Image (tube, rainbow, N blue to C red; front, side, top):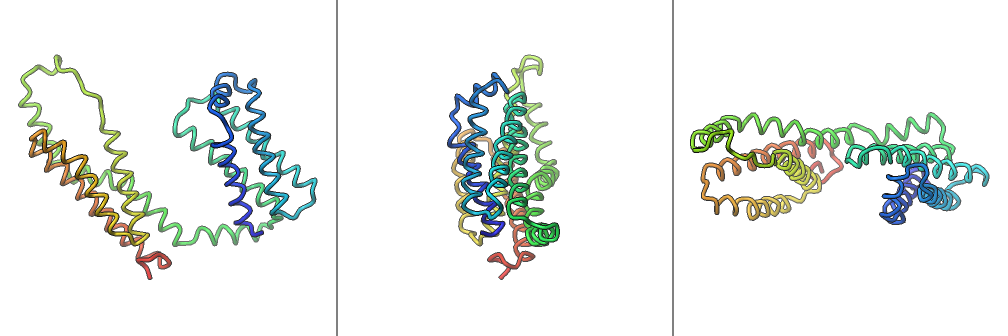
Length: 265
């Protein structure tokens, strides 16, 4: 089996063991008892057993070496998850945990396939050519950078709305109960919609972009119309269209560079 196929199988069984064969009570017990939780070791044993099954089917090294690689996968999982149990259950902690697990699987794949340093360099250069880097850079640009650009472009209108609300407020600022700050939620909605738009463009699915805009209009602009706040409605519409326009422009540029994708053909 090819190196790519072996790595794909190891990642697949990792997903099965980590998310389908690990009950929630195991996670709770591990977070409470850390390395004293028996389920932590059962979980590592499951990962090792599934990795051994994949290696026996797809790899060629001697049997004892395959057992050693499987033990390494299981033991590393126990150590990584045990250390993670001391951290707060946040998204960064989850992402770091999964990245380390994948790095372990990549390392085992290189060992099991007896890949030389020259082969590893060739594999990396093949996977990370200018086309891959262009696509990754496109997704990075449509997240935080585009968010900053849209915010700067809309600053005159956002400042005007803020001043108008401060002037129209009859109660003193000290007596007004602050509402929950949903700016971060709105920012993440923007991240998600721009990621979807860029993905649709790279897949040459422009109709899906129209569906996305229509869906957002139904959920967002319906509430704004009911509030009869015309200026706020126009401000949200302007921000949405600006975000869409910039992302579409970036998507067309990325797709034209990456020739193997539909827009580049």
